[in-house]
Length: 502
Ligand code: NAD
Image 1 (tube, rainbow, N blue to C red):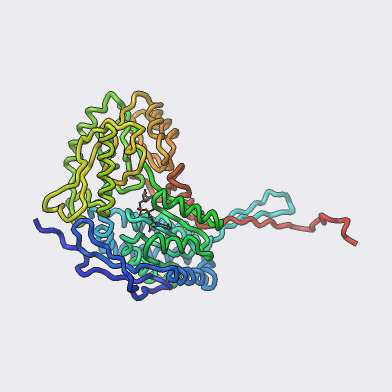
Image 2 (cartoon, rainbow, N blue to C red):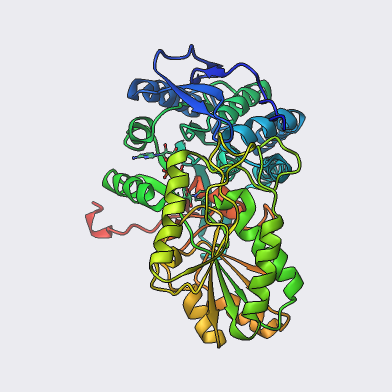
């Protein structure tokens, strides 16, 4: 069988994007090889603290001296809409680049660019309607004004699993708020971030408003986090790195938003539409090879229907097509890199040692399509208990852990029994049960009778070790703004220190 060709035959070589233009690539490059077939896809400049200084200086100048912060909401909205239009016009190419570099089945990932455009247009609408408050009931001689001001230069640090979606849950909102940004994409998946930075300039967004420095987290990410002229860090990534970043921001009293890991559960009650639940549960752990922070990595299923449900789920899982990112028939593709694949398989081996049963999958795939890549098919583990590592820890692969329950209380207790709190699902036709369960789940998102659906209007984020801060919705705009009160005394002010007046 012929392997699909890569999107761009010669590897792309990039510099950083600073002050409206791509710089000359540095001598020190980071190579990105396809995890699906080993071909060289792109070479990114390994940034230094000096590159970060340059990018922050450009962003600060655009913020303070060149008027981005003072532009009217109408003007910012117009530029954001133009930016969204250009992204839409370039979507096909961006989808291919993203699919190859982040290893996504292209059929499943095309929607990501649709979301990116939607988020940009929604942020434009927020720029247009952003407003403060006037307090007119403070007495006849007082007026209170509550105004929102852009925070300043925002450092954005993003992961490899959804390079553009994770970025656009931040970028257009920060721009709508009037901030300027320096982005540190993941070292494996920087192409689309650099490409959209070029589009931002083409859309007319002034030089210095959007900057990108590529490279390693320990160098570029740390330099950005500790930079004195960066007012806020918005981070999406692992809880371990988030904890470090949060600590550093705490030391310098810098604003920080942390979108971290997750360990989502789908609670399926016996009275659910089980057909719909089968489809939703399957999607929730195979989408993007399970490399999703909000994945439904655990199935918590009512005992009376568990065995039949899981047998059907395994049948369907075996029909999932795993293939090259550009194979239009594929549902899933390779894991992001070899080390990560070994980590995922290590979790499966560990679960077996602890008494779990592999119902399907659990191995690296082999054969013509798979031999040069890091492919693992949908994996279902039965007999999983709450004390097992696979139940507690984020595996970040296509692995579902199945645990049975007998009462609604037990179901909620199990779902809440991890350190994470990002997303959970609940399935029942009984609306009381559905909503009372949703209310008791400790997570920033609950999907009820579906999974991975929503709208840009709805804020999302984590609780517990999944972080804090909200993206999308009106909350996303306010993330990048400081609230100020101005108290105005009207009329004649009575002296407070009358005895000091001669
Ligand atoms: P990661 O934490 O290893 O890296 C994320 C980013 O941080 C990368 O750009 C990396 O270079 C940078 N980084 C690494 N060390 C740093 C440091 N010391 N200082 C500053 N920056 C540093 O995460 P990953 O492996 O790229 O992504 C997977 C993780 O991201 C998973 O845990 C997943 O759950 C999480 N994630 C969360 C969400 C969400 O919305 N909550 C979304 C997507 C991914």
